[in-house]
Image (cartoon, rainbow, N blue to C red; front, side, top):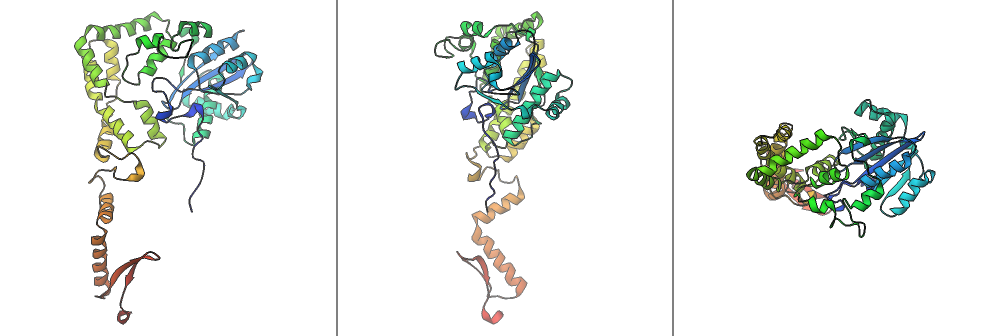
Length: 380
């Protein structure tokens, strides 16, 4: 009998497959909790375990909600109300027909789920906790996995960022053109020369320009330190060119969908962390030094994967041969049986002769019974 059960429900906002995702942008699931002329709003990218949230209030909260949705461009939205309850939201969804899935799931916006979010994220605004709790509940229901890997939420105030309505954002062509919705010809296209998944961070910072002078100066100083030191910049760039999308690779490991090749990809990326960290420490810039100090070299992860997974593993786990020889004595023994089954059977045959004293005992095989022990009538 083969056990059959639903192990995962795939939806637009809960994709983790690299071939279905754009490496340079997040894939957001949005959760909207509407109550008394306000909304708790949460965005979660389960492929990177990133979650952010805010509260929207005021007489024009619906228009402000649309601005936030336009900024993050979620692929899927769940809410405690149907879209027909808000004419503004209904019109926005109509303009994006086919690219955003909207569902009313009030069953996820419960006190129990809110308490779960409170226990994980602390004393945040209740409307934020309702939205985050619903997101965690929906992810757990569809992905059939514990959501403990989403450890924190970044709660922001809209005043932290330059406020732009959806029309302004569209006309500025920050990340996509008005005609064709392409990257080419946008501000992001001009600035993006990244060779890593940090392109997602660049997109996020272009879409959310900060307003605090201290934060702006901190970033400028870090960029300036690299701009003024060509040698350091080139060395860091060379090392980073070997770094793969660690955020999404780790998530695939959590979901138990990672292949042996993806484990080796993690190992490869981690192997460059000590060198990158050392280069950042030598920069002389406080921001870059602080970044280095807070970087875990993940030595234990590197040693575990490097000692256990072969350098060029097969694409599929079912192909076998992904574990190195001498890593597991038990596995080595099983491999020897598979690779030299005749010698193994000969040993069993000799052992059974010694145990029984029957010198003409033999081990045979047929397709009906499999392997069997054969003894002469005179010994029965």
